[in-house]
Length: 252
Image (cartoon, rainbow, N blue to C red; front, side, top):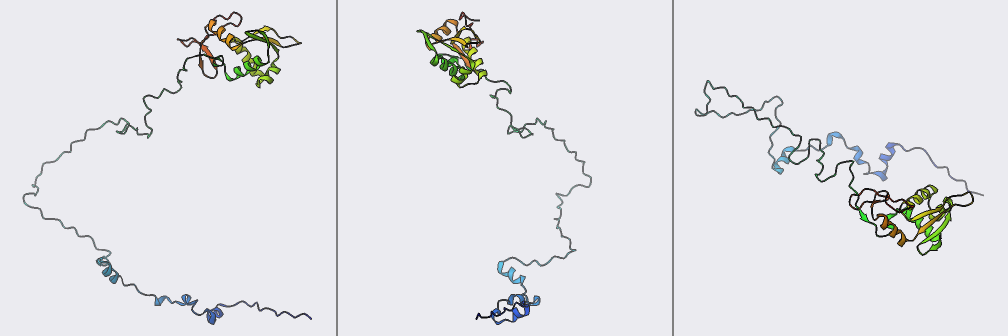
């Protein structure tokens, strides 16, 4: 037989039962403090211990008494004193700039050596000692791809027949970039078109060696460059852009 469980008493405990419980004696005594039994502070004894004089509480309607020293006969003003006119101060023009060099707006003046806005510095003219000095990144990538895949023609050049799509795959450039870079390489005397495009095959180009390209540029006067967004050949002294005709190699 199973034992019957005793039903627990769930009656809520009242506040009086909690206060009268022997187990809680002394734990709720702070709740039984009456307001009339609070200690009274003696402010006079506190001022005596701290050394602060007790001035007392001033009267609410008392007015402060101001003592005025008696005027001596020597310092007494005459009965009829001459009127005194104030001299106006000299006006100082406001230039908008304080002594620290900062205007009233809080923005400091620009330095004297700063270039005017919208005017860029002139690019430096340099001599092209290598073939790659006269090429941009895309032009050099296309030149290397054509030279490495071309067939030898003579000691100074190679031939290659290629279309723009194959050219794009070899140089890892877009077709539009290949069209622009192949024209730039022809103007810079690095390659030369020897056979035009046909429906059966692409164009045929003669790719000159680095040594032959430098010699062709030296003959045409393409010796100095400036670098901006790309690379451009210029006159060594004036900085005026110069170019050469791909067929003759002369100055244009």
